Length: 512
Ligand SMILES: Nc1ncnc2c1ncn2[C@@H]1O[C@H](COP(=O)(O)OP(=O)(O)O)[C@@H](O)[C@H]1O
Ligand SMILES: [Mg+2]
Image 1 (cartoon, rainbow, N blue to C red):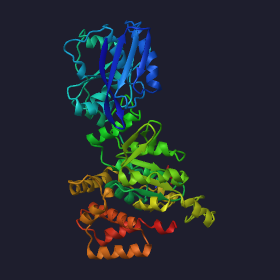
Image 2 (image 1 turned 90 degrees about the vertical axis):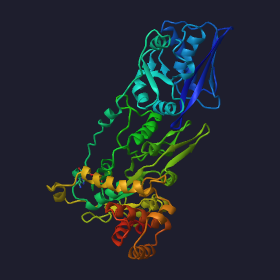
Image 3 (image 1 turned 180 degrees about the horizontal axis):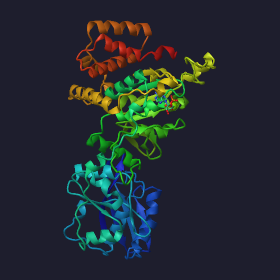
Image 4 (image 1 turned 60 degrees about the vertical axis):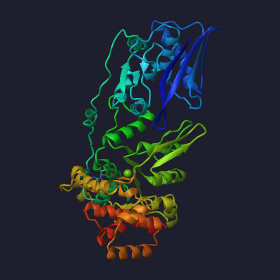
């Protein structure tokens, strides 16, 4: 007897249908899985065999062949245990589908334990999302632990089960159930931003740069001696960004789902991602990779912030890999097994000391580094990478008296209101375009949207010449000036907008 069950698997952050064909026929007892399955799928045989036996059914003493189609699509992991087990039960006639169900509407995804328990798997949100768009009448059957994640998507009926026996009772019509329902808003109220900008004393210039970065989606570098508050400032950017919209939350959650990073009690990522990988990270972990390419830190930071603290400690080749995603907002990872594209649009925040000892330019302490040491230290931030950093900000060490002063500092919420206003202006500006923020503007946008007053143009041109800036740096100044003007709700870019934007490029020449 042959049974055909539908399942699905993720491909990047998208999903694809997998057909699980089970043939049980005469021959010596054997159990074979074909169709490009990896080791975890092969192990499925042992789990399925035990799960069936321990759920009160019998495993056929016949020849069992399972084909996972399409064959060219590489299947990984243990997601197919459940459809394989069900296929065997149907093919051997041990369960009979109730007439209210049609196999062409049922999608099963899940891992089985030896006892027949259904365990959660990664990537359920992309699968549910795909079904809601492409297979509107489908029923998604999975582990109860995955049910909340699946039900976050509207337009697909999700049913969660604990045990293989429960699924069989449901499909044979012994018990009826209604689809799993979640209140998505509940997860949004979960978000709590614990770190507030008001905790940082003084540092007006750095805070202003954070506000501009958050408003226009600009990349930022903090440079200053140890203990000056660079890390503290960077950690507070997410609190300045608008809350994720539902669509953004779902996109971010899809990436985290594929990477297996969702927690069971908070399956929707509702907070802006803030990723701060350690400087020993490999390029594969940063941009994505592995035999079967998984999203890297840059994709996990999508719609949020990627923070590289002590950036000069990172390996140079690792930093270089950032250039493509910074330009494109996505990354294509190609490995022998597959070529997969993941979104990667984030605000890059870098922090570093000015020299190996950290005290170059400090008012109190003496720097002990030789000019050669300093040059070597800085050479890692290559010109092309530094060029892409719109805002370069020096963060001086505060006096103890300033840190302990009882002054009221502006809260993140107050700054966020201005950021949101500036973002609204940008949304309207780019309504017909595929970009959202000034930081993403291409050359054509610059011509169209960055109109300068005559004075402003003169100031900009003469500064670019004086500082010997590259064309790319010139474009970045324009983008930042656009954001500064938006914060003031000005249509045209004026001299003081340009002047402020140029200030943030001051490191360009001193890095040489
Ligand atoms: N402007 C500031 N306001 C309040 N505390 C500060 C400030 N600057 C530094 N600190 C204190 O100093 C500590 C070290 O700051 P940190 O951000 O780690 O410095 P850096 O990353 O520049 O080495 C912080 O945890 C904080 O307690
Ligand atoms: Mg630090």
